[in-house]
Image (cartoon, rainbow, N blue to C red; front, side, top):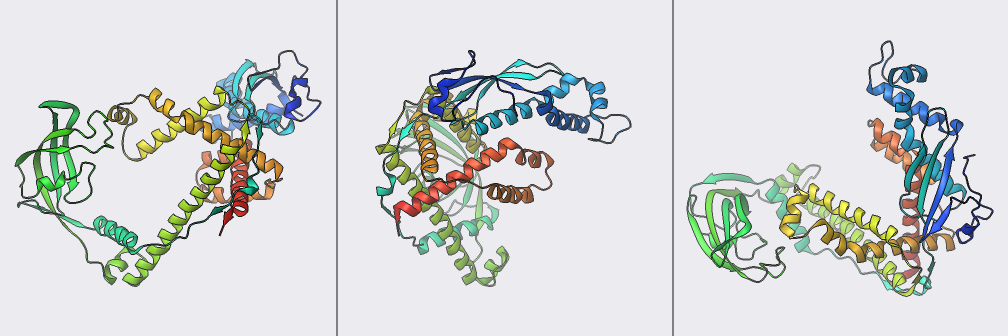
Length: 446
């Protein structure tokens, strides 16, 4: 049993004021605890940490990962082993506290190590954010009609066109630009004859006639050849990312560097066979229709979930949600944005410059959505409890086994997936899914 320097006589969070230890405090939706982990409890974590260290360094007479604990201790010092094991020790003890005491927590705890000395119990302070209370609206009264999914031929045609382009041949030509050509250009932008900051772009590729973020831009280049230049003016769109230029007249000076003729393959049985396991063009279009149905159904299901949660949020009563819950969610949202920008091949620094916003500006914009996301979490938690929706160990084991099959060759990911904290995370994700499935079954009209 984990040694904890406080006493819970009752499990309910509303009775948490019964904590007996004078250093344990509950302030503004946060619980501050002083926790102690015994030598016995931390021993398995220390053993695993020593094994990881012995995999990283060369120890004479032993294969990587096979050196005994005492040998590793002599090689690197016991404090290094403790430091390596610390995250696992804290994570395991924290999740045991949350589970055993049925704490209603949200987000990650703030940890402050109080005592970290070899051969002594580890003592740390954990500041835990508690779930605010919520009085739920009767969600069973909500009724939403599910829209019918109907794939249009123009949707299939668009995918086929994209597939054509992906398998097209580009031929450098010395002729006037025509619709459908791919051209490499340099762009200079001016406002009232003054160069626009960040308005110079070199070696930029566009397809003539394809939708472009500045309407009619590519059409102005038709009839010109490589090494020629053209000047023209256009009205910028009202949704242009630089708000200072939106709906204003901008002058462009464009130099054509090179022109490529784009030869598209004919859409026929041979084209379909070249893409993979398709016997005919008909097989290809049927598969595209199925794929689009799956994608559209996913979007419809996601919107149904959002609509139901929004209705429940709008009619439920929430205890005040403290900044210590909102701020981590905002930071998480900014990280999600940053990851999305990186995946698109851009740098976050460049994105911020182009958008004329700072990180702080984005975080301020994210605040309403962050609050909504937290309220959604609270609602899902309440419904899971009121409807006795839970996850069995077999559900978690099945999901873990599926993940381990995918990452069977990656030892680091395998170790992380098998950790106690990841299992708790997975439990939460599976419960979320079950609750959302329950709400759709209850509230959605077919």
